[in-house]
Image (tube, rainbow, N blue to C red; front, side):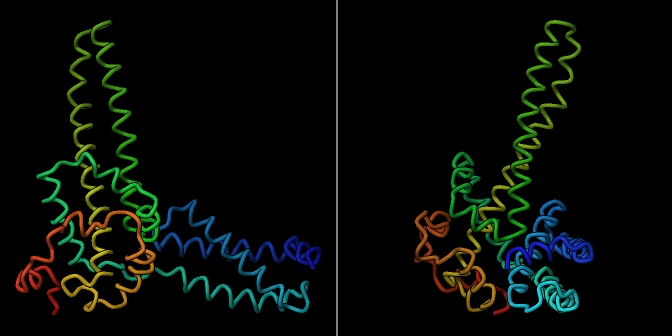
Length: 259
């Protein structure tokens, strides 16, 4: 069985068809928001694994016509799965959660926010929300650029005292850039925290969000892997510890405007 399957993958016609399919599927993954290299790897893995599984059930492993039929069916399935789905979190809920997170950290600072976000369970959840995952990567990029700014600042200070004091003037734009990156990093982290808070709000049906968006609630439950089984402190408890004391008017004000 395996030697026949190996000969199948080595066939030039099959390789050409797989290459064409990979390019098209990778393009669909890119449209869905995946980086180019990641989209290419996803397409290759998806095609080879899926086709290998189907070929095991084909009587003639070396029958290209039979493979073409499987190829077309697999292509349709992959392209359909690669199409971008609607965002799991309603835009209104995103904005309201971000406001809560912003107000909370304006009074208590941002020192522990990064440590709360980059935990195992949170990272798994973030990876399932493409928009949040992209924001987290932007946060990491901002952090690396800040490190580069610190190194440049140190080099400018040394060069200014050793060579020419006028070099110290370059500290001003670099410092401004570092402060801008720090501000961006905080905003990115708050956006990720707001996403995690919104997922929990959907699952817990707080203020009627789960009932108003049942499909999003189901997807949020799948992403969190069971809200009640999570071992880490709840984001609801962190940002809304006294939510039980809210009256009906306050809950309606926070809830979806459509209901």
